[in-house]
Amino acid sequence: MKRLVLLGGGHSHVAVLKSQGEAPMPDTRLTLVSAKRHTPYSGMLPGLIAGHYDYHQSHIDLERMAGYARAGFLEMEAVALNAGERLLFLADGRRVEYDILSIDIGSTPPGFGIPGVPEQVIPAKPIEVLLPAWEGLRARAAGLKRLALVGGGAAGVELVLAMQYRLRQDGAVPGFDLITDTPFVLPSHNVKARRMLQRILDERGVRVHAGRKVAAVEPGRVALEGGASIDVDAVFWVTGAAPAAWLRASGLQTDAAGFIAVNPCLQSESHADIFAAGDCASVTGQPRPKSGVFAVRQGAPLASNLRRALAGQALEPYVSPPHALALISAGGKYAIATRNDWALQGAWVWRWKDWIDRRFVQTYQRLSQT
Image (cartoon, rainbow, N blue to C red):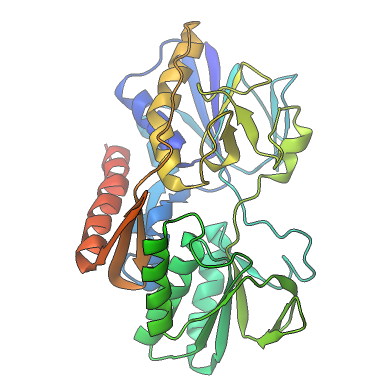
């Protein structure tokens, strides 16, 4: 029996579990290791914050999916990897041996050594930290005066608008500040999408501080470079993506940012018995944004190549398209669709996004109930 270990319950790995449940790999013992039992679908997080979805509707039960795949499930965080010895170390002291390891653990918002980060901020990831903090703020919404979010990408814009919408539904009207060190919001999207989102932010009264870097975060205050500061009740950190700290000491080859370097077959550039997908990996020669849509697309190729690796067959390269459709929610049931140089907006875009997101999660929820 060959030992296949999946580390992390990201979007690519749920596809591997689905593949295993549909057609079990022969002579293979599969184990899923995840720090949490329920994994969120990233596309539905803003809707969860806004109140359009509840926790169950936006999460996949990994233990049930492991059951569908006839796999073992260990709910425990990994803290180290010895790639040379094929050993995965867990937070409770256990060691997990493997023949093939696949890693899909996502990323965390980087702090870049800024004073007060992470001590004084609420990170957008992991969601187990974000949700309790958010519900705690909602519980005292009437006393809130101003909230700040740091990060001008799609995730930051979606989150600030979702929070504002939900608090207004609760009867509270605190001010919101969106801080980004980029010259404008949505720097990786086209000018039409940027203008649409900026117009929405202006109409909703969200103050955008573009081209401003955070110098420090203190209790009740965000200091910006140049001397300005903002008095706030809370600061949410939604900036880019950073890899797990233990990856650099694992022996795996990484890119300059510390993400696992993989070839187009999603196989480690340094260790043929290790694969990686999603935000924790960077495909050599294929720079792509850290986005859930790319992780979803890597699921089927990853499942196929894991089968091939276990069977001793040649792997098949996968080239993801350089551009992907982005559906960006705007708080209420309204969204923007953008790709390449075009952008559209409206309530119908949100209904389209809602249909796509629900269908994705419900596919796995139905399987996990069989």
